Structures are given as structure tokens and as C-alpha cells.
Length: 115
Image (cartoon, rainbow, N blue to C red; front, side, top):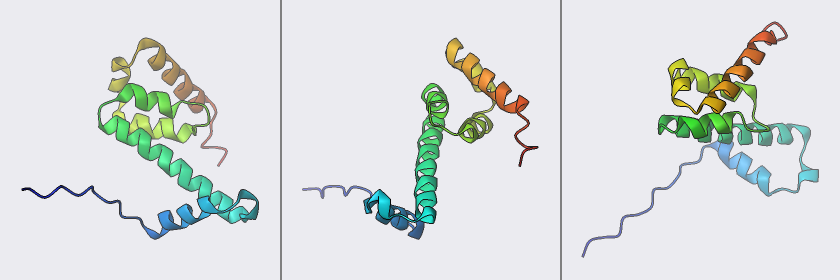
């Protein structure tokens, strides 16, 4: 009789443990720094999902998630760097057009000069 394979476990680092603890606290008891840490953790989780989709070859879902409401423009820029510009030809026409328009808007905003 073979042993049942064990489910892989996730190793949490100190930052992830801290974020997990913050998520359990009532929102009104969080300090401003705690709120920023929690937001940064959620943003990191979003990027992890986007990158995983791109690496798995599902560029369409990755670009859709990167351009969804509430997503930071930085996700789209990072995804574009990760996948390269040739992947846009593999996306549905409407999604590729939307991505290019958004990238163009970011480029015209001179956001680097505002830093």
C-alpha cells in the first residue's frame, strides 16, 4: 500500500505572518502604518496572481487582471516587461487595443517626471 502524498505546504516569511495577523484585526484598530502594510501585501498578492498567469501562458487573463478596476498601472508595465510586446499580437484584438491605449496614456502622462 503506497503512502498518500502530502499536500505541499507554504512557507510564510515574517512579512506574510505580520500581514495575516493584521487581516484578523478590526479595521478601526489598525494604525496608519498597519493599513499601508496591509495594502502593500494585497498589492503583492495581485501581482503574484498576474505573474503566475503570464508564466503559465495565459496572457489574456493576465492582461485582463492587470487592467481591471483597482489595479495599479505598475502591474501593466511590469506585465508588459515580463511578456514582451510580441504577446500583444496573441491577445484578442479588443484587449490588445485596450492595453496599448493604456500604455500610451501612461507614457504621455510623464509620470516619471512627477516623482
